Image (cartoon, rainbow, N blue to C red; front, side):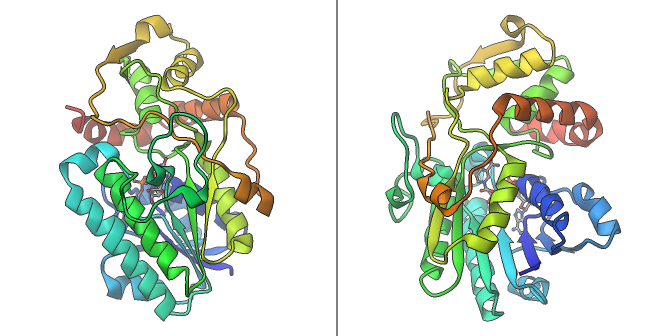
Length: 330
Ligand SMILES: NC(=O)c1ccc[n+]([C@@H]2O[C@H](COP(=O)([O-])OP(=O)(O)OC[C@H]3O[C@@H](n4cnc5c(N)ncnc54)[C@H](O)[C@@H]3O)[C@@H](O)[C@H]2O)c1
């Protein structure tokens, strides 16, 4: 299975995956609507080198999905509206893309005889957990565990993919929060890094004690390559870094200050949490994927540092996006 359709391949994790997998000799077609979050510029070197065929289009448009699938034997489905804060103001868009769009891609793929389909879900389908870890079987049908329009739409899409997995070769991956190069600066880590580089403070929500299990996006790419070969149809898999000790948002912000050489006591500004029901802690049990043979090489401080260095070296990339990204917090 060396011919892959990657939906949402011009977004953050998609771009990381496309660089990784073309480096392994796979032929890639990217289907992407190029919303605010998609950047064809991310992939330009690969398109120019003939390693990626790029199709601009909407996953809700069946004709374009079917034509993009020509010659592809597998699908990695990233395309989604992905931002919690935005989902509060336009939930319908999130349901259209994340639920209906996923159904169109699943139906088209199996009408076209695709041999493997990996749907990218999220740890947010389980909701928040105070202690302990969610295993794959802990997801309830429907969206009752999820707390935002984003996570509810992803929860319904996850159910759809699992339903298709009863009859077709579908695998569902539920990763924790990713970070790394090419992440749009609306999201916490690139927002904080770019703020400091611009001489602005980091706005930390609440006391900054929320826990996220930060997973470096290149590791998610490796995990997907592993699942293309080893993932068993009809199964969902968690993937996480499982940091020990866990990383609070405050810790993450303090590391970023340290890496950029500024005083955390001056550069972190605590502000009231703007999100009602803000999930406090995500934590996943990864026994299932570990026993299948995948264990990510986690080194959070080094991977945060590599990310900070990428944003320092690629200011042109994020400066084009910064104003739009900040507008949603006004
Ligand atoms: N970023 C994370 O921390 C994280 C964690 C777990 C799961 N996920 C999931 O991984 C996937 C990718 O996340 P991301 O952070 O890279 O998102 P992103 O917002 O950076 O990228 C999404 C991509 O999808 C494209 N897209 C949006 N609507 C589309 C449509 N209707 N048709 C075609 N393309 C469309 C966008 O143009 C963009 O290129 C999503 O499904 C997300 O739910 C993300």
